[in-house]
Length: 400
Image 1 (cartoon, rainbow, N blue to C red):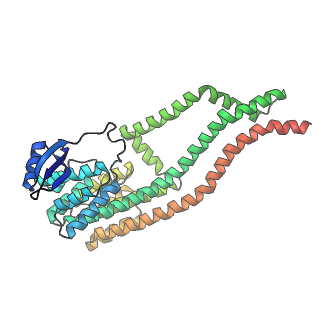
Image 2 (cartoon, rainbow, N blue to C red):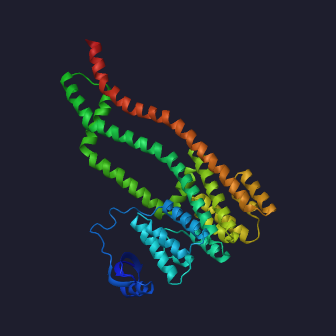
């Protein structure tokens, strides 16, 4: 599909303009004539010099909003193609507008919504596509889209909480390191000139700081290269080496305080995702296969795949969960009650809500705990350097 800009006149002679995706200019002209518009100009939309420079990427929140809007209009009786045209017209993000228009064009060409979404696996993951396929098969697409929107909103909120718990201390520590580097490169050398005029022996702690300053001034480029290189190597290794990613996820679950938050987050995502897929009518084994990648942790992903294999040979979900030694007793019992009562999705929703609340409370508590702790760390780092610089001055004053 390519985006075209067109201009033409309707049956009343009124000039009409617009842009629309199409496979070719001729096919777009035929489509416009079918709509009662006589095309005068149809040309491919030119790409700007810095293509995409000012365009935002498509976020999960954009997809959630689109899903909610589409579900609302379909429930009101608006045909899906018309609904997508309305949604595209209201998009400020060019990439999102192009995506919606492309999906609409695919639907007009005879594809199902599931088939149209399969062409965009980055924006619509396997879970989203499977839920849409189940909704289309059952004739409840608008209900499923509404469920997907709620699911994505809850999951993104949960991800935000986890990022807050992890990024806040990391950012503050990075700032502390940056401040220390600035002091070593720009401030400490000024003190060194002053100390040279004393002609007295300097304390060992001061000499250590001066040595660190000299090293930073001489090899700052090597330190910067090492930091950036280590960061890039870490990210690449996590993406491309499964064993390394598994090791990191396993170690992160063992961290004090943060590890428990990650445990609760994985359980909440597992429970909510399985509840949504099961409620939409996706077969349990297929649902578990989809859920595995949505837990956000390789350890839990392997555990869910193990549950899938056990369920496929006849085990109950609660029994399969127990074998993994990862899920708390309460979660297993809730799953057992849900299976016994034929309301597994309802029980899983309750589990998800409970653990999401646990994550919220833990993150708030962690933030309150970290604030004074980080202030202490910053005080120790910066304060130590200040004390080290003033020690010779205090020593000189004591001898006078």
